[in-house]
Image 1 (spheres, rainbow, N blue to C red):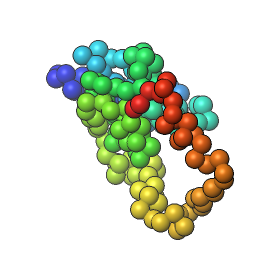
Image 2 (image 1 turned 180 degrees about the vertical axis):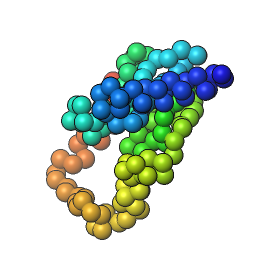
Image 3 (image 1 turned 60 degrees about the vertical axis):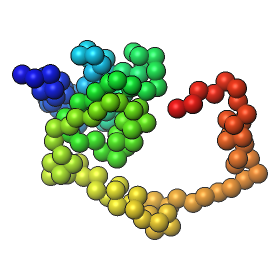
Image 4 (image 1 turned 135 degrees about the horizontal axis):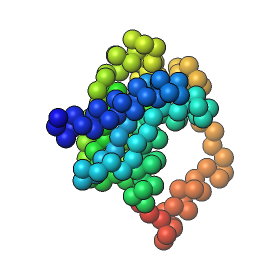
Length: 157
């Protein structure tokens, strides 16, 4: 078994065990650095009543906490399934060296985990999205960005 196969099988096993042992979603993720597992995650959306508790997000949280870093520099991500739009964004913000996945988004859609509507919503103008997104500007709207610009203590990312 190759290096990549070993970690992919681990992600798949986490996903399967999550379904059979806790009735969570069929998704697992393993984050590796220098051949060592530094974070794992499974889908815990229903267990924690948290729509952001996807396997990749949970693994990112675990790995970043262990590394004491907000980035996954030099890390590889092994996900049992192609990341959804939320996880894709989180992974890109975390900046790993590579992302490997097993099943595709089409495979996930075939069992009821269809995120195509999110991709479609992103392509629509804000005023035509199914959930209204309305800009509201106040006198204070720009203050957080001004504070960031002035801050000597900021950590850029």
